[in-house]
Image (cartoon, rainbow, N blue to C red; front, side, top):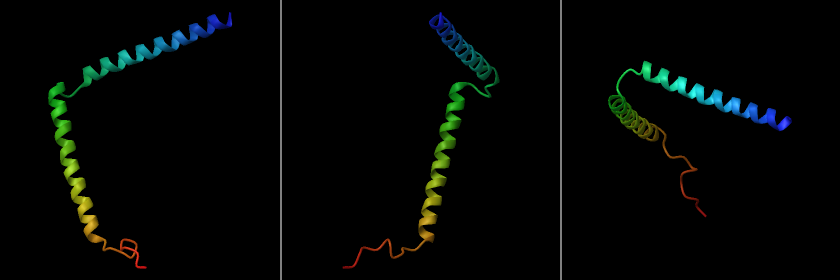
Length: 76
């Protein structure tokens, strides 16, 4: 009897998860601000701009900090 209850409970969880996924997908489609290809172009464009800005900031930070004794090779 316990195995039957356990299987029912597992099936119920799977059913709830699938239903939640379907509802989430439907809501996502309804509230999407733009069609898929347009949204992908925006995301790719934004990520490449952010990547360039991050590289620039890293280069600026590296230029601000002079080498210290830990960066120099060990003198024997």
